[in-house]
Image (cartoon, rainbow, N blue to C red; front, side):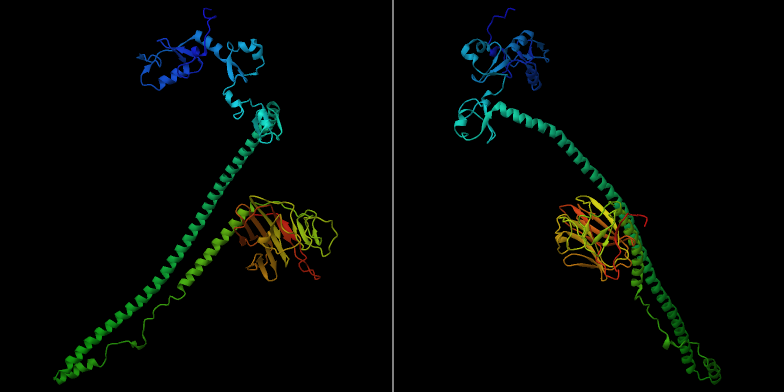
Length: 513
């Protein structure tokens, strides 16, 4: 080719817009060359199309022609190696001295690198070819004789291999971490979706209940108003009738008074005697001394209306309690008692569903999970999120404890309160008590046979229910949970007469009860 022996500098193959070696060079009709991307972008930003070099104006956007010769020459000018000694990158043509001159052949050549200055130590102007493992930075040879003298250093390649292996491990872990986070997003999304459905259901139920209650209140109000108005109308009618009768008698008496007055002035003996005869029989009148209008008594009217309203509200509350119990029963969990935690006097059934005081302290191996002082036991299962519910039969028992306890409770013995990690309902002959400081005394429910325990870990809620009576007993709210919770049981001691010998029995939930 005609240009094969011509010596060209890199400047001859630089785009006047980006000042770099041509990339896909194209020519304009005025004979100037640019990178296709550069000239295209330049014209996209102009109102008029002109040449950036000679400023020639074009009526329309010119068609660009690929400059094949310039493309081939530019390709030859691209850097093929970088010299870490000369601190420069070379194209194939300018690299030739490094391949021919003995002194230059000792220079270290690497694949083309950008920003070679970043590979030099800013303090010593020497190549960064070592790695300080103490400060985790790249250093030069002079650095190891100064600030990094006592630090372990290794060649970059050696540390590269170590970090590459770590990177491979990270690369393998990242997809798993991504998958875990996607799964967590799904869990959160599912939770929000369930929460939305629960909220819709609760709003629907609440809407029905409040509509019914509003209807009851309005009905009682209307009946109360009607009763009071009827009493008032009855009194008003009685008064009107009496007033009319009185007015009629007044009219009759007024007429008689006129007749008497007129007759008293008569001097005609015959007429006087004949007229007087008719005056002997006065018009019939009532004895009004005992007649009175008694105002109606409204005492008790409002109370009776409110009593009726209360009865209706109680009926609605019963329906609501039944709905509430059914809503928590859906969170039933299958739990079994853990024999490794049971006090030596306790006897557990083989299936782990029943516990009672056996009366005799067994010799058992030491276990840090065991309750050594009080006849307590917890389940094998623990819960550290979400909601859970279980039911326990307490029929024929006179004393018992039920509830939940956190994992870190002191099993040697302490006061059973939320402060020490217990949320517990206690029953004895004196009634029901929620063990707190101070205790919360509750009404003793007649013939309490089965107790339901519901926990919402995230909301900090522990609730107790009379399952047979479909009644809420008590709720501890605002609880703070930060570790696993275990269902907690204490069947209470029994005496020699056999009182309180019945077991506590973990029962399956039957929502049709």
